[in-house]
Length: 372
Image (cartoon, rainbow, N blue to C red; front, side, top):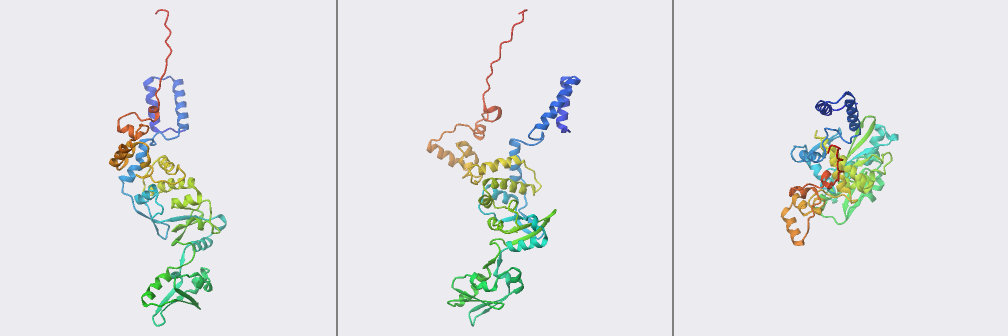
């Protein structure tokens, strides 16, 4: 097993300094290799405070790209610092919700992938209309439908009258024409009717405005703009074990809090690595554990995790110093200095590692020699 250069150099320096014999050197090298093999981290890997800085530096000092094009067709998703803020502020809705839809083995063909993508994408009336005319004489909106598109999308023309539900509007399908009229015609409203009608949902999953099919290795994957995990998992051919969303709250609702924890780690790691930056994943794991420890997703912010610390000084050190100290004084709060931050502030040994306990030892008296 090859050891890192730093460990080799330190071991050789130790051998020279202590003038170890050949047998002692062999024992030392064997022990070094054993310790290195069983160690939980690399000798040059950042841990502790340095691991924490591996997130703070990229997040606060580096310039990070805000947007990224996912897929060959260019689905623009929010990344960089804005995305990190979305994750750690635990925002209910991401600015650009997306899903990565995996397909099962039986649907790993381009044709089947396209069919599933079409079934996922939201279809509105405007997507099946070729042309439209506003008839002011009859006070009606007449739209010409694309019959080939309606057939491809499995939209029943006869059922459109019942499916399109607009308040105070009559809908009628005459051949390839869709006619919309107000029950109480008003020239002011007839021009608004076009927008209302065109934005009416017809098929697919609401909110999924774009789908892109990509080839990743030997399988087809569908990337979406818009997210609805509950409904997409019900579609035949979708792999329910791997399909996921960048909406952490949606992941929690569908799969549970453990899946949400994993999503926080994965999303944050991907956002940082996409910028070409490095970070110790254990720090992200620690943050994700803090955010989901109570079974619900909590933000790392002044009003939740940071603002709910028991230590007055720890709360004051984060943000809104005057408010926390004033409230603590009014309430008569006591700080027992059990955490890291408050002990550093007053220059005391922190209760971590060797500072977490007092070591008391009683050594036996050395037996006196005969000469003494």
